[in-house]
Length: 200
Length: 53
Image 1 (cartoon, rainbow over the protein chains, first blue to last red):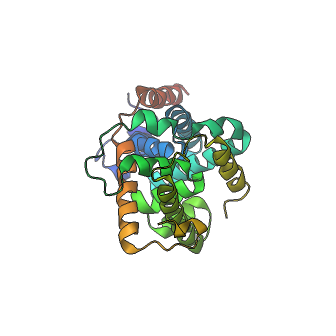
Image 2: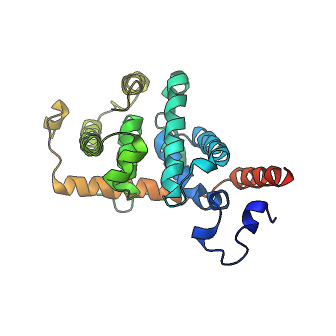
């Protein structure tokens, strides 16, 4: 169990003193949650997490221990996600809603907005919109942190988050009592291909 | 109800709060899922391989 890396700090094994590689295990839950948020597809999310772990492991010397490891991992994950998206647009097109339908069957016990409707709307957002909303709306990163992870300006993060919230609201209103959500493959593909070429 | 379809609709503070509350729930649901063993196994394998060098 003892590795050369671990032996460097044989005493006082607090998080800051553990090697970044040993700390990777602490971030599996967060990485997977972020992956699920981006992909909305469990199998694809798991592949993404696996690839992220491999990349993080072999590039660990590029991580600055003074910075946030989760943010560094999220950056690798989202970059991996977007380059895979460019390559396999066809596969991504059928991921709309399938994850939410199978994995989120909890009853909507509070829901001023019905949670199922919310999730369906969330699934229909472009990955860029899901990403910005999860980073700044749900996981508590600052717009500055998110800007760094996404490789864009802070202003872009803010305006993208606003547009994404607006789009969510639109999707939920359109969906009210309508079955416009049926057969969204074409729309999903259009959204994805439109949003792929540049992150700006 | 449909005016924001034009894309000009404004999200008021209450709507924003509701959206963010739901976003947190989406994220929390994802966070509460059990992490598959394959990732811990993968890290263990990488570590073992590293130790052999």
